[in-house]
Length: 184
Image (cartoon, rainbow, N blue to C red; front, side, top):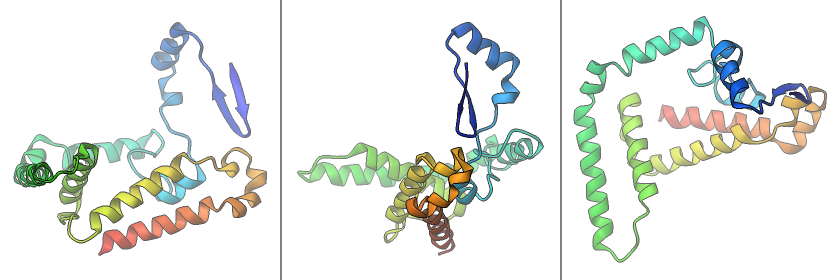
């Protein structure tokens, strides 16, 4: 069943056989994520691996990531960073255990993953000062904006209502703040 939600065509598949058929035979038609106004702002016109449409550009970006970030040699080169970050995380857990407070393991593991990714990507320690907290806030804001209902994606002729909701301006501010944060 094909529904039209504003300008967005939405296919509803109600059987496993039909889903299998779509995923195997017509997978290229459904391989890309829909571009939205907010993701265009936050993700630099959808020019990254997660949001760019499937095609030549996406294949090249994936190839670059695979060769330069995720190759066995490159991953092995991060082993000292991983050891340092794991040691820091264990020390943090040890400190929590010596105090009467409960441990929020979600926060500890999030912080570990964030620190590890930031060190690999930028070579900087993000746990100094409030950098880790600021990064977490930026991720939360980006996550909220990416999933928020933006009326102009569905009904472009109502784009003028976006002024009242402020999602686009909020996304521009978050994008700008993110760049300033990364440049520090």
